[in-house]
Every structure is written in structure tokens, then in C-alpha cells.
Image (cartoon, rainbow, N blue to C red; front, side, top):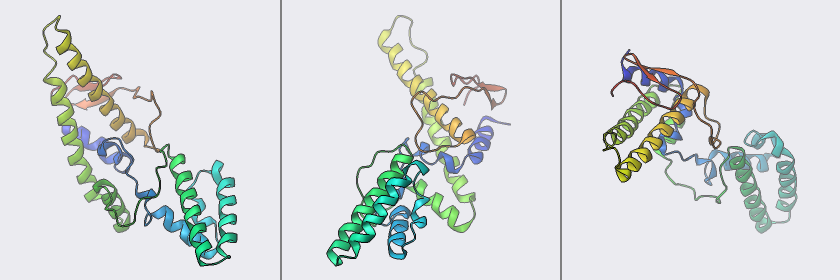
Length: 226
């Protein structure tokens, strides 16, 4: 199995989990937009009186706060149109804040409706809608190969620095650290799944075959050329 084939195998195994990683490490979830799935569920819960419709979007430990906010919003809504709007806004912000906290992301306010989702998010949703993940796998495969090529070539170009050249050596180290962390995050996500953001210090600890006899060690070093 070639290097790229091995990378593709790992990628397909963790297709959906890799979405935030291949987008620069940011969780581009559309969960904080006004027309996103979280606010949509919150609206349905308020309109029907069924809190369970939105409970699925928060962690179990946050259910008491969600329940209190839901009851408060439902009572205030009955006071009139203006009060209804304020109550809905309060509940939307509460639900999104709790959801974001559950995935380890900060709450930065509700984003306007109509914002185009990041390509990876759009592809992920499209795959779920159609029930077919082939297009998503191909999309992520291309992103993985491009990202890996850029990371690998960047550090490889700086590897042969002259002994004693501290400036060049530091440039290599910076590129090496970035490269290794990128590989670790992608590998961990593909093999173990990505639940929100990776905690600090969480790195790959296993050894994996890179293909063509090459090996990815626990430090991310690859013993075969790309």
C-alpha cells in the first residue's frame, strides 16, 4: 500500500470526524447561526412546548439550566408579542451557549441567518441528507493530501540547515512542531473520533504504518518520502 493510499484509508475511516481539523482547527459548526439546527430545535421546542426537541443539543449536566430557561421563556412569551421576542432571544442564546460549552467552544453570540457554511460543513450536511458519503470522502481526501503535502514540504525544505545556524535551526523546529501536531490531530481524529475541541496536551501515542515500509512514530516522524 502506498503512502497516499494509507492516508486515504485513515481518512475514510474518520471522514466526518476530520471536518474541523482540515478547516484549520476551528470548529466551523453552524450551530450558532440563527437558521442553524440548534436555534431551529429551540424554536420548535418553544412553539410546541416539548423541551425534549432541544435537550439533545446540550450535555446532560446542563439540563437543569436548560429546563429553567425553557420554563422562564415559555412564561414570558405569554405576556405579549414584544415579550415573546425577548423570551425567544434569551432562550436561543442560552441553548447555543450551552451547546457550544458542551463541545469546548466559546460562545461569541448568535450569528445572522443566511451565512454560507464552511465548505466542509456543507459537504458533511449534504452527505447526511443524501445518505451517501462518497462526495464528502473525496472532498476530505483532497484536503488531506493538499494539507499533508504543504506541511511535509514546508518542514522538509528546512531540514538541511547548517549545524550551528541557530536562526535556521529554529525555523526548522517551528515548522517541525506545526507539522507533527497537524499529523497527530488528523490521526487521532480519524482513529478515535473528534468530540469538540482537543484538550491541551492530547497527542497521538501509538505507532502507525505510513505505507511503503514507512512508519509514523509517536512523535510524528515519517521514515518514508512523500
